[in-house]
Length: 168
Image (cartoon, rainbow, N blue to C red):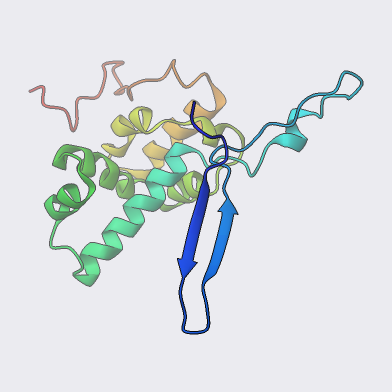
């Protein structure tokens, strides 16, 4: 049975004599044992810093990648894909977030309420809209309604928009 507390021994032999240092390192953090009379702390007190929504991280990543391309650190999106071990298509999806209206980008970077619930996949058709006012309308609808209801922007005649898709 392996030792729960492995000991790392460091030995040095300077001219004046040997020095030996032993350090016990616990590999796994121990959970405190709950006592029978102890009250459980509320979840908010136990939780660490709030998690940053995925869409926020992706928006920040798109901005960082664009800066890298502009500074010449990488040649193009294909280089980014190779460095990140992802497909060029995935890099394009992330970089397309930069085509959103600036105020929508700001909402994604500093989410409040329903904006934090947006998913990148749901924003893909909105990114393909040419007018920022249309993008704002659809993002507003998504944040007010159930995000799973609105999956693709509709044209004036009620037909789904096919802009940006391969259908054709």
